[in-house]
Length: 360
Ligand code: TRP
Image (tube, rainbow, N blue to C red; front, side, top):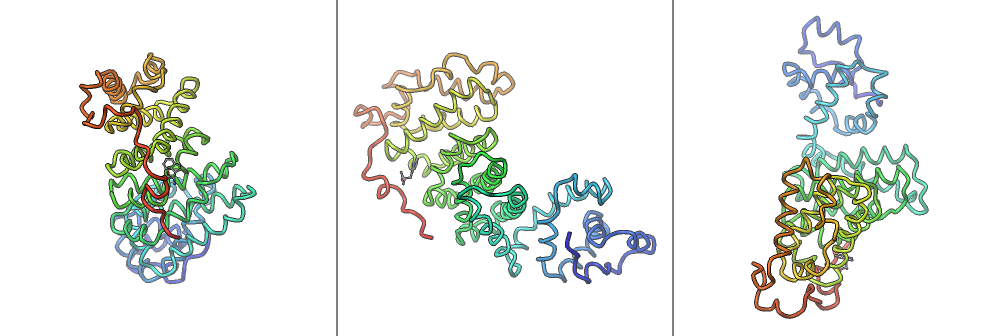
């Protein structure tokens, strides 16, 4: 772990003799972590921290390895403190990082540094875990309401797209995709139409669909969650149902996930799939298409056992089945145009039809 600058390493000067005696036995970074954790000492520690550039601290963070590594060098109370501190810091770190000089570029450089290892796939576990730490820091910027808009205006999510676009099954790639999806997940979680608009224009959906098709359970789940949040947004639902190709791209991935879940159930993933279908039925043309092709396994009780402990998902599925079974002309969404055709509207050429691509 890199040394903290001398101003942090020297101590805050406000501590009493006992604390100072203890201080001499502690490494500067341990003392700083402890002080930030202790309510009475936090003020001094933050004052100290504000005197130093954020970067060394960030670098410390980047190198704070997994807990097992920490365990050998610091006490278990300190490990707990690190966990609490990480959570606490995540709340306020984003604006601090965004406005401090050079922090974001360091993180972007970490990401750029792995591009050459993406294709052909040569990413090492070590490089992957390093870049994942950098991406986790960016996630805090994506989540924070004060920094989210600037984060989007700077097109930062686009730097993650090449990582999401990888197909290698190696663990190092899987964690790269999962951590990158975490950033996108943080954006969609915020219920921010600006963020959804950004993601639609920059064509996150095909990237998510591929991960839903080929990823491991966890990344499939996060990718499906992202798609669910996008279609819950009105613009997202219109986007996906704008052309028949888009709708069927999503419907066929959902369908094949249902088929594979019948063999390897995952209640979490199933719930997101059900929520996606449920939302799609709000669109009249999608509803008509789903009436014609809806996975049999969701109708015939295959997943009753899997949904045993999730009354919300069960209820959603029931509502969904009721909507699909309702007589056509009684369906709440069938408008005057609904008698024509049973599938989403085939719009003009898809690339002109949808929102234009984000310029890089
Ligand atoms: N340019 C494509 C489109 O606008 C992007 C795309 C490919 C897509 N596959 C998709 C969008 C699946 C939604 C769903 O259609």
